[in-house]
Image (cartoon, one colour):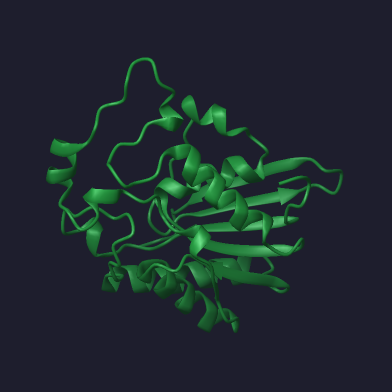
Length: 207
């Protein structure tokens, strides 16, 4: 990916959606936002406008419905049209797509003791963490070099943060950044090329 990074990045995990309530797997299934999720998106938009000087930001989103709906509310409030990119999708869970979490727990392939965690494929037809990282890396490298807001997903957040902080994919064997539905993560460059995790998973303002 070289040195082409945006100068400032606001990552937003999509807001509460149906799979958070119906005990279903998320992945590439197109679950819509709940009513609470729609309210959360409005609060996120106000938070960005009030605290992050949103002027000059571009707005990008995963192409899955729950992310598109989140970005649409944010975009309406900020007067920005979301740019939809499939590279910012959640991790693909293959045969577990559309299944219950109980089904997924029963059928998930356990990791081999002699294999790296990032190369483990939990479900046939799905992605490994390395494949997710490389896909998201293409998404980050395609962003304009200035200020960007990206609406994505929970599992994807660790890779997005790691990519922007220039943490190699192999380090995902031993680290994870926990975020929540509606959480905001703020990443900035200090002008001297230093990457700063300014804020991780801001959620306390959400009701």
